[in-house]
Length: 263
Image 1 (cartoon, rainbow, N blue to C red):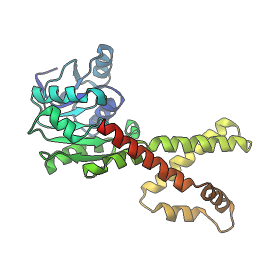
Image 2 (cartoon, rainbow, N blue to C red):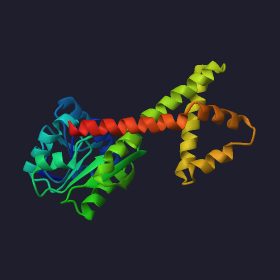
Image 3 (cartoon, rainbow, N blue to C red):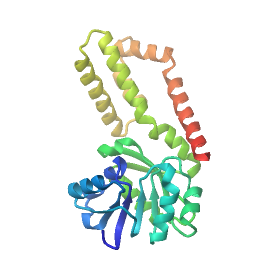
């Protein structure tokens, strides 16, 4: 790796690779990006697949993405700052700006992000917030990076735990819904492969309709004829408290995120 790069990705795991692939697909040159990864085989794999330079140590950069596990993020932030990084984007779950500030030292613009796993297929949802040194330009820089693999919103930091509870953990809730629909189809006599294909495509199609911008309640009303099959099914979901169950799930995940951030 050269002595300095435009953008350094620290951590070559799944999320680091997702951002790397998204940035290259969005037009960034491979020569402008470096990846720091401790595992030699993984470094070789990323260099071969994407044509980027890799190293087992950090170097100076115009900007660095911290895509490591939360338990090492403090030491990584300190190392990146010491190497001469102009600004930092952290995607470590639950790690606060105060923690990152303390590790990197005063004066470094830092943006904290909470992405989710659909970023792996360029359909991610992420929220960002910045420390007191982060300008609008720094936030826009982070938005451009995360926007290469999905959508990005800005929120104040005190709402990041709620973001974690909703979109960070949300894919698992949807996967559970998919499992439940498949099992219900099998119970009604469908072969499991058929039930899986129908359930998965139904969720994909419904999500695509939502992406067009119409309200969920409007889309639901379009499918629900008075006295029809959908109305009967929805009545059972309401009777079993599905809305309350999702609200409780988001609340519990939000509370747990707050607990982990405080530990």
